[in-house]
Amino acid sequence: ATKKHAASRQLTDDLFANYSPNDRPVVNWTDTVEVSLLQSYILLRDVDEKAGTVQLVVETLFTWKDQLLTWDPEEYNGVTSIIVPANQVWTPYFTVEGAVFSGSDHYWKSSTDIHILNTGQIWWNIDRDFSLPCNLRIDYFPFDSQTCILIWFMAYSPAAEVTFKLLEKPE
Image (tube, rainbow, N blue to C red):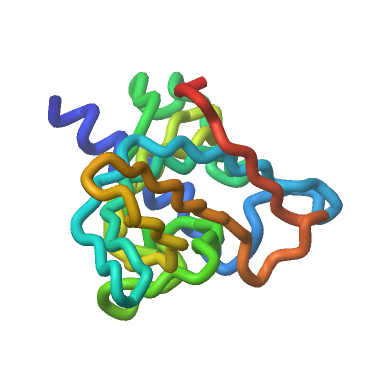
């Protein structure tokens, strides 16, 4: 276990020696980063009929390939994955239209950890608490049903640089 631990530490040092989390994770700047997101769960925390808002807790899995964070496991004692703090890795700036976030973290940046596979595949599972405007029709309460729409969008990145797709199930 100590050899694997030392190899993981050396790998992390090597990978991040010249890495900047501010740069898009591509070798060729004309490449597009495709980010997939999967809604794991949505918890309805509160409904404010008067204000026309719902408060949600949303857990989301983001996944993408970071071309700059790949390695050969044979060179690092068979290490095929590492976990690092999210602030060390490029992460997409997604948000939900009209959402009012709890705390100061409006763009899904967080202090959670990121799982990196040797292929450069990134797995980032985070949750956020926010309020969202919703056209509530409660005329037939308690026999009513409501539909609130989450509109995801990419903040700060042109579509040619970063795209995203919603997943129905994990890939």
